[in-house]
Length: 171
Image (cartoon, rainbow, N blue to C red; front, side, top):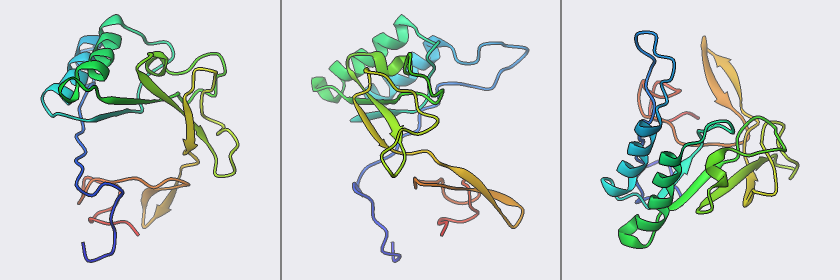
């Protein structure tokens, strides 16, 4: 891209799947289990995703239809080879439970640590975790009246005015 920037998998695609919507007409539950399950299925059956990376969820939310959707992705995706399904442990700093998605046997549960190897002040933790990785520590700094993320992790951003920065790169 004439900037010397390349990712670990430059020919990969990121496919965002919307699983929730804004509440309408006083609707209390805008995260409907069937909508979430449809989004999970769509990711592997329609878009042929190899990896499903999930940083949403709750320790209190659980549903057989959602669990079944993840199990099917992990066993039927990629033409029967199964998709790799990854989920964050949650951000409640709880030792009693991790995000329910991470408790599904076919899902890799990931907790957060700081760069020095110490558990992040936000990350849920328990013996159910499969792995930990550096993350979090994100704060926002103000530049020219706009807030931008600044922290220990870097990730992709949407191009143009839809992203954090009004351009294609934030340096």
